[in-house]
Structures are given as structure tokens and as C-alpha cells.
Image 1 (cartoon, rainbow, N blue to C red):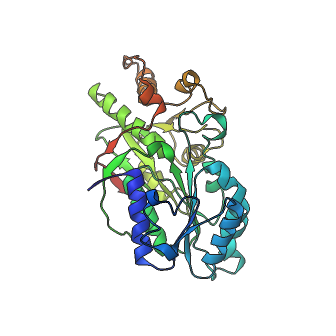
Image 2 (tube, rainbow, N blue to C red):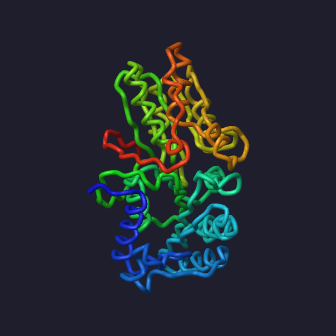
Length: 345
């Protein structure tokens, strides 16, 4: 069945609520009828006051007592009020007690761009979570990722964070509702006999796949590696690094500023382990996102700018310089993912 990004999130939560009575959903607006959770699982869905630090602390406490709290934060900026509980309590808890006292709390946090949110509500801050030892980090790019990540935490003893790009809300996919004991670190959308790889994550995936399709029509093949799971023990798995090593030209494509970011960390690791690579970094400038329509148009990358960068580097004629529509640049992309990828663990 084809499901949208938010519908898959709801279905995965309903599955977990039914599977385990100690799975709890906490946060603002989780009890609303639109969420579709409270009526079916009244005792497991807890509407909280507007105090992020307080209900994050409640969730950490519950997790140490055998519960599985799933905490909703509508914005990363508001979640920052709870960083003490996330970073100095949850992520360090098991370590402080000698490795035998788990704290399996999960924080689902919305991040990234949305038209009109301007400089204060479009950040990702993914590198903060990546740099925090003790936390499993999930960044879903597809509805299938949402299902895999949320159902996976049902049996995960580690504290975790799901960074949910709001830009992907209208994407959809045919969902396989299979419960996996092990989930992939990423997915490879491969074109045979390609020596060029786009490496991305989160909300940049639709534009990378569109660029891949455009370039293929011009007889230039590129593959796309999308990263989605960053375990606490090994943020970038050996299989991810080995997959990258099969390509000569690497394009790291980010929707957040590259400096100090997630892909910047991977780029440094790849450069230290693999020789003879051509590496390019594509990202917004190292400034906050503007608010005005015209300035946002020039801030984020899109499939046209990605395609033209690759074509230019290979001395090929540029893709059409047509002006993208308002919807292309500012509204959630309506994108149907196909199952033409290979899972990388």
C-alpha cells in the first residue's frame, strides 16, 4: 500500500502502541484527533504541558523504569530547551551505570526548511546529535525509513533521536510493513557503470534522484547514496565507506551549511581512508536561511543546480536554465519513491 510520510509515522506508532503496553507517546498535540492515537490507546498517549525540559525529564525517568517513551518535539528550536535531558542524562545514562542500566527513550524532532520560517526555524543542527556519544541517530528520507526507524526502537535499548525533515511530508512510497531486527545505514540508488556518486541524506534525496534522472537522459550516469541510520557505535559503517570507495567522483549534497555538518564529517573520514578521489561539496551558504521568497530561491540547492554543477564539471551542456516554479522551491515536494535501491548496512 502506498503511504505518505506522516501517515507512515502514525501507522508505526500505532503498531508500537499495540505491540507493547509500555510504549508511550508524549508531547504537545499528540492527543489531538488528527493524530489518531489517543482514542485507541488512551493510557499510553500523554498530552504534556508546554515545558520541553520537564516532559523530556519525565520521559528519561520513565525510560529508566522499563518504559519506552516516544517524545514528540514539533521544532528543533524548542527541543533545544531539553538538551540537558537529551545529552547529559539520556545519552550518558547507561555509561554512568556501568553498561547495565538502559535508558531507551526516543526523541522525534522536526527539523529543516519550510517556506516562510526564515532564519529562526529552518536549522537542522544534525552535527550536535552526531557528535553526542551514546545516542543512536535516525534521519528518515522516505516513508519506508519512518516505518523501519520507529518500529526498530521498540526493541532498541539505546536512547535515540529521530530527526524528521518536515520538507518531506508530502512524499510517499509503497510500504513494506515488515519488522526488522537490523535496519540499513543507507540506500544505494545505483546506475551500473557509473563512477560518480551523489552522497546525501534527509530532504535532499528527492532532488538528488531527480538530478540522477535528468543526467541519465543526457547519457551521464550517476548513482545516489542516501544515509539514514547512524548507530552510536559506528556513525558511518565500514560498508558505507566501502560503497563510497567504488566511485571516483563524489558529490556531497547537503540542505544545511556544509561547514561543521554531518556530510563534512563523512567527507573528512572518506578523504583520510580513500585516495585518488575527486570530491565536491554542494550546500547552502554558511548563513541562516532568509525569509523572503526571492532570497530563499537562491539559498537551497535543487535538482537543476545539482545537475548543472555535474554537467559543468564534465564539460557538458547545462540543463535548461528555466525558472523553477514557486512550488518547486518553496512547497513540500510531492514525490513517489520507487523500490530501485540496495540496502547498505
